[in-house]
Amino acid sequence: MDNDSEDQVNFIKRTKADTMTGMKRALFFLSAILISVIAFSQDAGDKPVGMADEMRSNGRIYVVVAVMLTILTGLILYLVRLDRKISKWEKSERKS
Image (cartoon, rainbow, N blue to C red):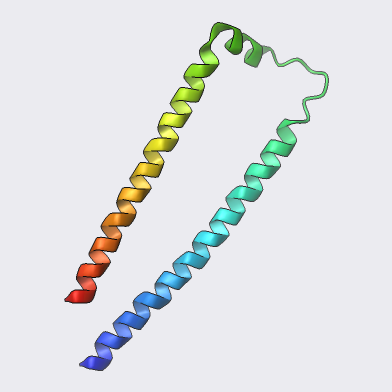
């Protein structure tokens, strides 16, 4: 019986390490995409950007930024809450 619980603990540790490796890969991938998008967006050259200038002059750009920040904040809070629930569930599974 003790061997089974040790195997479960080792399995949880192993999957947690695998998850962290996956998260590191995903973070690297997302940062690489972000850097490439930023690099390509800077190459506007002499072309005027009419839509951005119009939105800036009307003040609508702030609405767009506010909506984007609201969505991003909601996603981050959702992930933090989900992580806490999963951690709590894992602790309860270890005890039983």
